Image 1: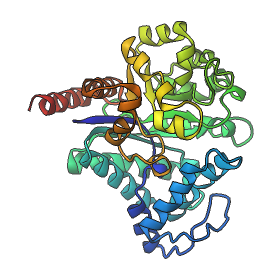
Image 2: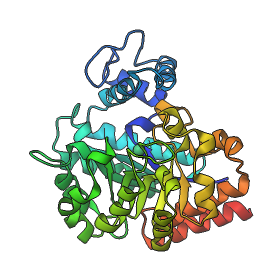
Image 3: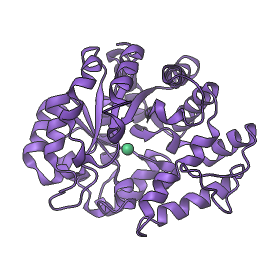
Image 4: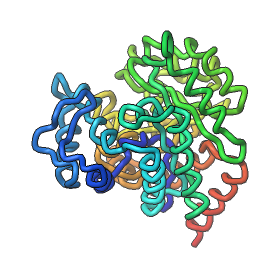
Length: 361
Ligand SMILES: [Zn+2]
């Protein structure tokens, strides 16, 4: 069965084998967290050692420092990506790997500012290298992907704010026949409502850059006070968001769900991530509700390196039982993913045809 993935953080989507390969290339022998601490007992050139480290991260969310350790664990993949060529190659490889495991279209996302931590290059060159990886996957292998340039909401505004810069980079690289997307990520949602970014993102919106916003993730049922559905509505109405990342708090508002359905705004559901981080148990995830109500919900891994399932297919295997989903639901999710992908009309037609051929053949 073919799948589509629309919500996958690039550096958190690298395989341990890829991290080890880049570590060997750059002679990285010591694993470090993002804050610079040595990670004891982890050899960055040994895939099993990396895998074991992330198993402890995933299992540690219940501890008081679980989130900090998770955020810090991004340091390992970031530390081995040390050149523009590395970025291009790692994007290319990840798209090819996902395609080999059944993804008919994969969207990767990441902040060009983040990769600057280990690459001494202007953010414009970093963004261009990421998009080159996507272009090569298509021209050399016929593998479909899109890159979404992201910024963290807590770093978006004020002096040195990244929102306007990332929006301008996306506008510069975006082409109608090969979109580049934009993503708002970061914590905490409620402290940075979407309306704050309206001015900074306007040039990208006017250039036709498609936007997705992490929203409705960081709260818990029944009221989701830390990530209320009103913020999702605001992202749609004030920023023109075409998709919402997670959107779990939509479970609390039939009005918000109606708005999204009527406007064709899609939801990138990541139930394994939500469960790992302690926000929503898999069995309580509103994905089946979204599908029943005709919302454009698709399925994604979010951060596969940390959360376990590497692909959408593996993610579906983890959630199908608790959510009582059958193979028809996976086909429905793939169909929704194609319809809400940030691609040109011509590419969407190709993806529909590939799905049709795979389903009939
Ligand atoms: Zn995410």
